[in-house]
Image (cartoon, rainbow, N blue to C red; front, side, top):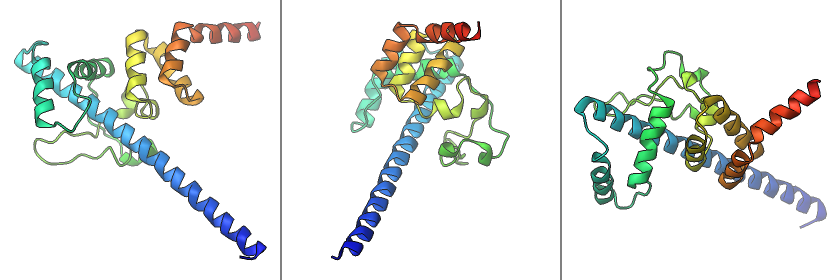
Length: 197
C-alpha cells in the first residue's frame, strides 16, 4: 500500500474500532438496564404476592431452590439476592403505569419500556420518571452499586448524591464503598460552604 492509501486504511480501521467499542458499551448499558428492571420487577412480584397471600420470608429459600432447579444456567437467584430484589422493590416503590409517551423517557430505556400486552406477562412500562432514583441513574448503575447504596445509606437524597457521583466519576463498587465510609458528601458540602463564605 502506498502511504496515502495506508493513511486512509488506518483511518477506516480506527473508525470501525470506534464504532465496535461504542456498540459494545451500549449493549452493556442495555443489558444492565434490563437486568436491573428484571430484578426490580421480580422483587415487586414477590412483595405483591406476600401481601396478597400473607406469605412470610419462608417462601424465599424455597423460591431460590426452585429457581435454581428450573433455571440451572441462570445465576443471581440465591436467597440473598432475592432478598435484595425484594428490598430494591420496597425501597423504590411501586409506581403507577406510565401515562407519558415512551419518547419522553431517557434514550437507553426506550427499548426496555414496552408493555408486552400478553396476559400474565409483567408490564414493564412504569412511571420511571416518578421513581426515587431518576432512570438515568437507576438503570445505569450496576446491581452491586445499588446494593451498596441501599445497605449503607438510609437517606434518599444522600443515596442519590453518591449514585450520581458514582456515575460521573466512574467509581467502582469498592471506590463507592470507600467514599461512603469517608463521608465524601459531607466533605463536598463543607467545601461548598467554605467557597461561599
